Amino acid sequence: MFEVLGRTEGKVTAFRMLKPDDWHQHMRDGDMLKLVGPMVSKRFYSAIIMPNLTPPITTAQQAFEYRQRILDATEPGFIPLMTLYLTDGLDPEEVRKSHNAVWAIKYYPRGLTTNSDSGVKNPADLWTPGTKPYDCLQVLAEQRGVLLLHAADGFDRAGAELDPYDQEKHFVMHTLPEIIKAHPRLKISVEHLSTKWGADFIVTHGGEYLGCSLTAHHLLLDRRDVFRGGFHPHRSWMPVIQPPEHKEALRHLATADKPFVWLGSDSAPHPRVKKEAACCASGVLMAHAGIELYAEAFEDMKALDNRFERFASLNGRKFFGFINDHMQTIELVREEWKPQPLFYAESGENLDVSELVPFRLGENIRWKLAA
Ligand SMILES: [Zn+2]
Image 1 (spheres, rainbow, N blue to C red):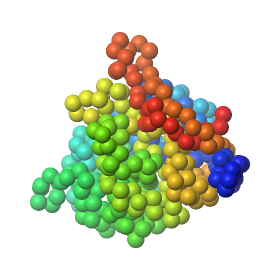
Image 2 (image 1 turned 135 degrees about the horizontal axis):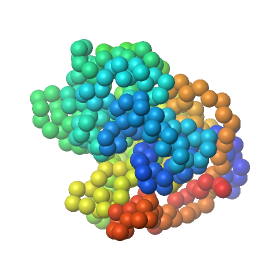
Image 3 (image 1 turned 180 degrees about the vertical axis):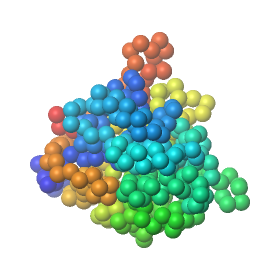
Image 4 (image 1 turned 45 degrees about the vertical axis):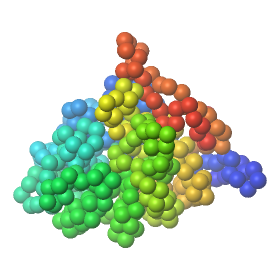
């Protein structure tokens, strides 16, 4: 389906592809949702919707109502794929009841990212029979749902606090193998993979039951970009942006054409005041260029071809069991543009409270969605 529409001096300047899916999307709620929703539905056929609202989405009813608010805020035809938030108290019966309403359950390590205070306190509960999180994963596996992992540990087994740059490494080496051993028939997606250790693990063990999503920002940036000339709050995420060798490992994984690797933007907007604050919130809006930034990364990686379409539009769908033969397409052209500041609440008295700083504000983005 991937079709080159224009080429200049051997370089692709325009192409058409199957409309992609975003397997990791924070659409938020309220006025912010109304701003972000159309950006997502313009570019993506469907998206996995993260459940870390306040309060978190932990029941089928909440997921159903949130889904309706998303449908009201997006273009007709867009399909939000709902998820539940795994808490210590999530009832396995609720998971059973949610079978037709949700596609996945999201694990957050408590306290390590936005709205993760309700996350599972003790990761060992994920593989310890008799705990509620364990029972929830058993039900999820029976239903062929997917466990979405924020793959980070806050502490080592001796209880010492881990360095943020080592959190994913520790999880991949110590926590993930335990989960897989305890739930061999559970489909697991490691979200926003960010390290070479993670990439190595996925290459070795990826397949029908294990895969990962990659963000555009982890493919485009490395740690030097976050600190060059000072700290850049609008290039700050969890998991943290790692040194260059990790970006290279992720780029290698993205272009290796593995069926267990797919697009998950982790677009996660916060108001400007929460980013430019004493304690900078993690996450940045990517939805304004949710596919364009990936096109840029794949162009840099010399992989703007069928591999890009499989990564963005086909691999995730197959893994999640989202059987859908739609033939909708999008077109991208190689044309530079600059993102502008965005405002999501006209009634806000303090402008900063309702302002979003999109990724690359004031800088160029190389690809543009054709109207
Ligand atoms: Zn996220």
